[in-house]
Amino acid sequence: MEKSFTHRPKAEKPALNYTILRGKDKIGENLIEIEYGETKLLIELGKALDGGEELSDIEKAVLQKKYDAVVVSHYHADHAGLIGQKKDCPIYIGAGARRILGAMDEYNGKILPNNIVAYRSGRPFYVSKIRITPFLCDHSAFDSYMLLFEAGGKSILYTGDFRLHGRKNSDGLFARLPEYVDTLISEGTNLGSGKPCFSERELEERAAELFPTTDRPVFVLQSASNIDRLVSMYRAAKRSGRIFYEDLYTAMLAVAAGGKIPRPDVFDDVYAFTPRRVQGKRKDLFFEFEHKRGIARIAKGKPFVMLVRPSMLGYLKKLAEKMDLEGALLVYSMWSGYREQDDVKLFLAEAQKLGFTEYTLHTSGHASEQDIERLKERVAASEYVTVHTLPTDRK
Ligand SMILES: [Zn+2]
Ligand SMILES: [Zn+2]
Image (tube, rainbow, N blue to C red; front, top):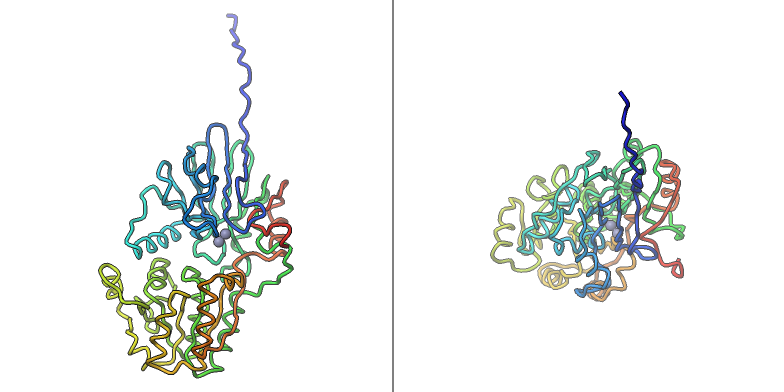
């Protein structure tokens, strides 16, 4: 019998493509689209760091546009600041990062939207035909990921924000990454700075040497959500025989991070305090902690290391009325650029008036130039693109 053949013209094969909407020549605020056929993803949904409450045109556009999903690498505001405003598709973020965002919302009396879905390291998931694999990496935000996108035989590895000099062992990450990717989209915060980055463990060593040089209280000015730094400072405090104070907000984030993270629900030498009078839900949350201290007991108690932020200036002034803070050590442990912010400037000036001695101890949350090179070699990318970089005229 004669066979019948139907000729079907070959449909054009879709390709895995990306478009960088924002994040080139800009520290942070990446907005990247990844497309394969009909499937469209948005990578990151952050807020312009200097944009205030106002939404920019590009932010309005991505909030209105129809995507199959948004995939976010970590909880920093320049990557995740607008996720609460997009309800029309699933938003994927790491399981630990989701817990942290939940704790931030709980502190602020809000509830995390239910379209925020957790992914886990090394466990691929699909949005239509795009396969996405998250790889846990080290960064100044807890639970940060590199994201691998694969479809139609092509791959794109997006690094999010990362560093190789953190507490996590970079060998583990390098062992898990693919041998080859077609495109590497890497963060380049430290490109062109020539800045060597000492490790987070080295930072702990330096803090552990510094704290015993004084018998005065030690205050550390750092971001509440920099959990790695919290661990370094706690360990240095413990090594120098000091107890550790976390304000309610920081303590809630530490509890959400869980595991071995120092926090006042399980660590005997970690105490929660409230820099201002708390009421309602916050009061309940504070009283849930077994280890907590009021200002009078802090003033009369054991030598300590206390994490602080610029908003706690009023509290430090009150504390100075109850105990002698002359000669107290203030460790500045954040990016130097924050010194230009009005609230930080005021805090540092007032701390000086209170008699504090300032000392800077910080290492970058971002990869050094050499480490970006190491990653490039490791994944042997055919194409290499950078985002999250300083504008060319500021390098
Ligand atoms: Zn960033
Ligand atoms: Zn970040």
